Image (cartoon, rainbow, N blue to C red; front, top):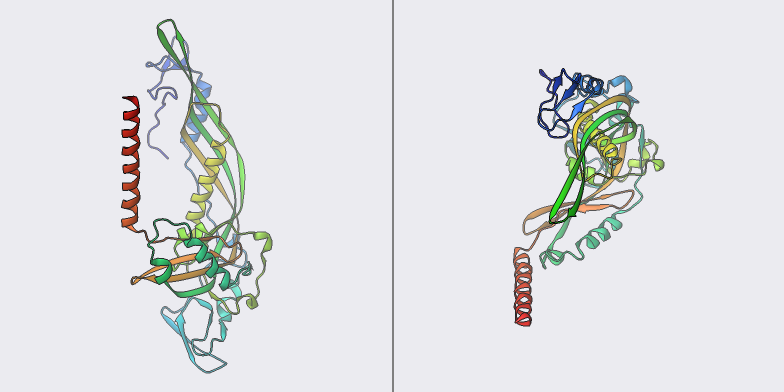
Length: 361
């Protein structure tokens, strides 16, 4: 909550005052007048801060908190097929034996409070991921010529990534300062009329299954870029879906991931309401009050293909949505090509200017 309140004119930004003659609030700079009742909502909004839902553990289906007493560091398992030792970190839920390739699923990482509510099974295979990588490289004019031939796929992994999915209701009260501008010429003079408006929007909006990945190993921006997933194809979790793939249990709780989900829902709410405002030359948000009401939380495993390639000693990571095939990843650029293209554009522009000058002369 703010320590002081300032009443600002939505037209010019000046401080407005109560005018005893008119019994209204008046701006001394642009003479705009306001009824006092108009400012009641202003007081109520500014005396109330945005609230985040608490996302209590009681709202998490199947439980959401980390189990106490888990040991840090590496864990060793014995492969039942070949007897080889499988050394991995404590969050590993599904992997494969490095000796015989046998699929390994750690039941304790997927049971009780750690059991996901549902899973979206992989729909696309490793070959599709490789093909999408080749397609991703096509048409990139700044890509080094040798990258396509010399980059080597170091690793391809199909991973079930742990995600928290948040349901939420948002209540928004938004006020904007907008203008409409009319111009006309009369005689030797050009006139411009600027009309100022106070535009308000309020209402409710609901969110269903807003995702936030619960893995510290994976870049959040990378995982966000793979959306959206089609949750209509989600099924009740069974460990059999993990056989042949990798999976980790979450290492960030629902409470730790909630701020990211809250930020996304606030931004989406703001955009949804602002997109209803049209017909103005300008529209500047002046006040945003968005309240989020907590809902249900679900724990899910979503399919991702990760590809690591190596070029000149540097690793480049790409990712593909294992359900939809959406492919993302950063590529190196050839500075020589960039300078060449810029130089070509400059020469072409210079030549065109010279030809135009000769034509005019």
